[in-house]
Image (cartoon, rainbow, N blue to C red; front, side):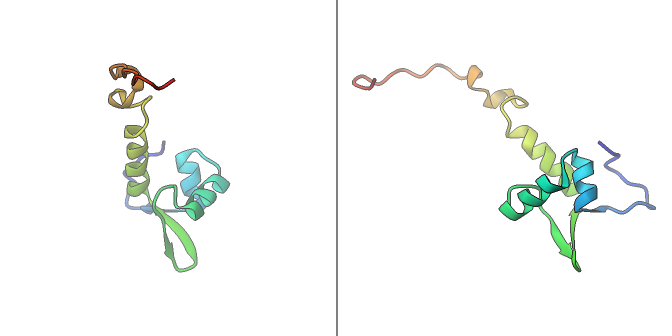
Length: 89
């Protein structure tokens, strides 16, 4: 992942293509996520769709925390087994 703290010569905003490259996904995936309101937050700057680098980083952290493979507290393997209710098959 590129440096999350850009120098003052770099911008702190990325267009859709650059944001997709930053996240390591295809621009089409990011486009579809945007229209389904599933992906990282974006906004319009004039006619261009833009993403803040800090927001992208925060969104990635949230994805890591909500994934049981990254967050062992969410892993079903760390939970106690549930008892069956009598009468249910």
